[in-house]
Length: 146
Image 1 (tube, rainbow, N blue to C red):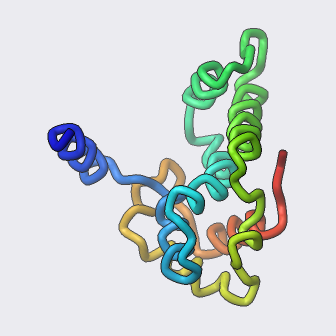
Image 2 (cartoon, rainbow, N blue to C red; image 1 turned 135 degrees about the vertical axis):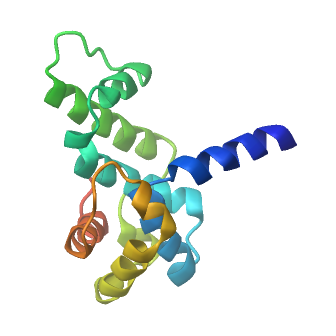
């Protein structure tokens, strides 16, 4: 088990975790949101943001999540992957909105700056600006695409 944790940690250190983790960290710090819950709420929104920078990876994600992707365009497969993650969140009881874990609109500028400064954010497939992160937090605050 220790070896597995070590190898996983080395992978994280060498590749990075991406924007979803960078955005989840401030939610834990500001609101004591469990890290897994914060990641789960944010993941579909960040997936949609990253979609054009992921090649065929989302097609594979959709497939392993039980979506019949044969005959789908790349865009359809990417959307199906995002929708499958939203559905999984719903099925396991993840809150659909950031407001459900206490996030307030007035905190978003500080959350976004903290996320932009987070070391994990640099590992994202698409470079994020402060404005992008603000918009993603706003989207997660009120929108659930399920």
